[in-house]
Image (cartoon, rainbow, N blue to C red):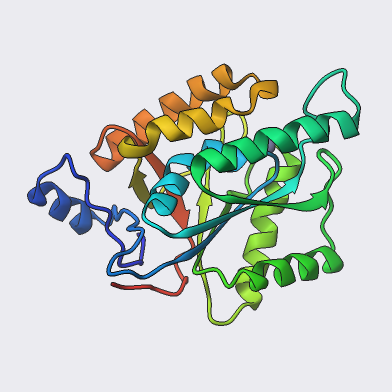
Length: 249
Ligand SMILES: [Zn+2]
């Protein structure tokens, strides 16, 4: 279960329903209240991963005045057939910038290359340093059981940084194209994204070079199914690292 004290009220549900959710452990994240501003970092392998896996949640956080920074491990250099790595990087960097503008987030590119990412002691240490500089309260990263190498690395980097950081940030894993990419993903908590679904869709369609209609079609199915699990219309699901520091309000 999600050990955070954050329960995102589902505005379309009754208090009884909210109580049921809390009782079953299907907690929903609450972007905060009483003026507390959280620092959130979302880590993704490529431009479009954070938007697909948690675009609705990002928009909920930024819409409540919290600061969200997106760490893109690569610029998606191998993501446009027929383009050179530099050409694709330029196009996809622009697309990521537009997606972040839509979501109200800040983009940071970590400098690895799509399809050629690596992990080493140096990479772990560099990542930890960059992440620590953000002083995050919450980090979202890709679930490391995934068909794509670059995705797996983001999950490992975030977990390693979590192990080494004190005090602990809360670490949540997100899913992208479950079944095709993310595997074996069983969420422990959810965010109702009904109020931000249009922004999420727009942020995915900002990635015009990536066939966004196809990405959206699959995630549309996923978020409806997660909505069934969370007793709301559409949701994003997350796996919390259970030992994370609990932030209560
Ligand atoms: Zn990706």
